[in-house]
Amino acid sequence: MELTTETIRILIVDDHPMVIAGIKTFLAEYPHIRIIGEAGNGKEAIERAKTSLPDIILMDISMPVMNGLDATRAVMKHFPTIDVIILTMHDDREYIRQIFQCGAKGYVLKNAPQDDILRAIEAVYKGNAFFSPEAAKVILELAAEKETNTTSEPPAELTDVEKDIIVLIVQELSNKEIADKLYLSLRTVEKYRQTIMQKLNIHNTIALTKFAIRNGLVKV
Figure 1 (cartoon, rainbow, N blue to C red):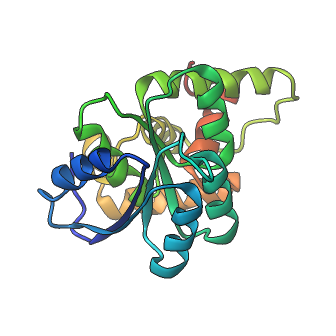
Figure 2 (figure 1 turned 180 degrees about the horizontal axis):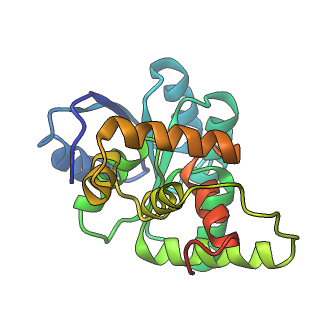
């Protein structure tokens, strides 16, 4: 995994101090990640977000006063520059659906390998989404189900290279990894990515994934 060299400011939200301590200990190994605060419930999370403006919030779901889903919705509404990664024990389909719909950019199970937390932070900071394999499968199924009830628009005029790049973006490859795989320069890939987003009027990986499913570029 290619780590960013920029400082990523993190707010951790969980009502269990031991969970927060464990995350802080793990992330302390990475000097480019800075823990700027912690909160024990959703209401505190919103207050901390307002004063500290982190890049990313690691958010639990089941908390007193205000749960993580409601807090995420509030953060998305009032602080659009902040991204949220849900870190939880809940792995059933309904929770995953709600997490997807509330605007969270990532979902990691607490019993997953700790490296998944780092991978999620890196992916989301770079503008991508990160969902555990179980959640990603459910999200793709939900997107496919939704599209079966709507009329598909004709695919945008995309070149073969642009289609290849879309598939690799959906597979969560970084721009450098895409460049290496397609034998292109990093600058060329960045330009292609910008052109694709402009052509499709799409601005995030989740929407791009839905487009790719709808137009047969990837399979569920």
